[in-house]
Amino acid sequence: MDIQKKYLELLKKSLLNELYLENELRIFCLAEKELYKKGFLNFQQVDFEKLHHICRHFPEKIQALIKGREEGKLIKVNTPHLVYADTMIGRKRLNHIEYCLDTILKEEVPGDVIECGVWKGGVTIFMKAYLEVYQTKNRAVWIADSFEGVPKSTLAQDKYTDLSKEAYPGLAIPKEEVIRNFEKYEVPLENVKFLEGWFKDTLPHAPMEKLALLRLDGDLYESTMDVLQSLYHKLSTGGFVIIDDFRALPQCEEAVKDFRSEHAITEEIQMIDSEAAFWRKGN
Image 1: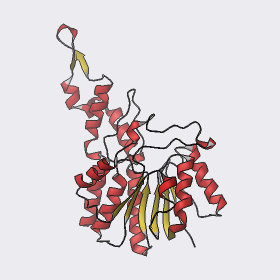
Image 2 (image 1 turned 90 degrees about the vertical axis):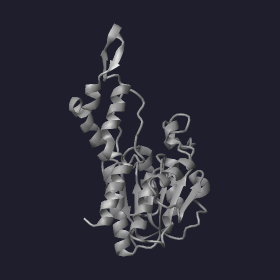
Image 3 (image 1 turned 135 degrees about the vertical axis):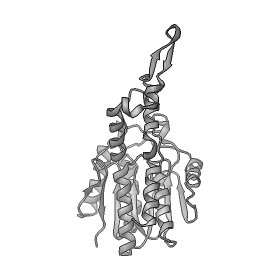
Image 4 (image 1 turned 120 degrees about the vertical axis):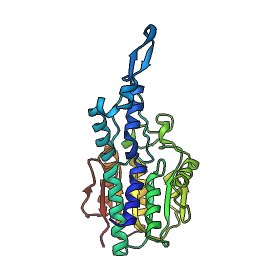
């Protein structure tokens, strides 16, 4: 493995917090009160032996956490889950993005790269770091996000799904935090371009000419359709479309299938893991 790949591998481990999963498990177990014992006058005290040897005492939980991080799925706990990573997409999807970028550079597919719906910015940090490592200065990394969470859709397809800031405040990450994360990983912001606002407002007039990679993480039917209608025509032949929530949310899959049917897109949809999917644009 060359030095560039070693760096990118370490970056993936850091973005996914794979290096410190046992600390996540400690937080979960403390939150679920699984690390307490009766102490003096029956006061609850932390069992520091269990806290220190957390993986030894909770082997099933650490394995579930490892598997969840591989697949981009959250561990099931009784308390509200917090993801102590800078991306929620999981190892398989992050590896696949590296594969896409490898292919784009090898085959010289023209265009920039974009993620629509970035959360803490982990995927775009990886994409920009990749381009820096391989000294690719002629491609911009676009970040499209409201930084206000997921909008409340007005469409019937999204009727029973409320992912808005009021319902899920943890999905609303300010732009300033995304910028701080770039700085934390010492990934330069040069040629990183922000499209701030709802997709329906920002993407129809987005100024990029061509795209080599289009990654969607909009969750809803409306958001997914907004992205595809605004940007798919800019995707170069051989470019990649990645749908993060393809099998996670039925309305996302419905939007993709409706768009493909409307535009007679027949390229095969391939699964990345149990939820995310992609296809390459043909001639």
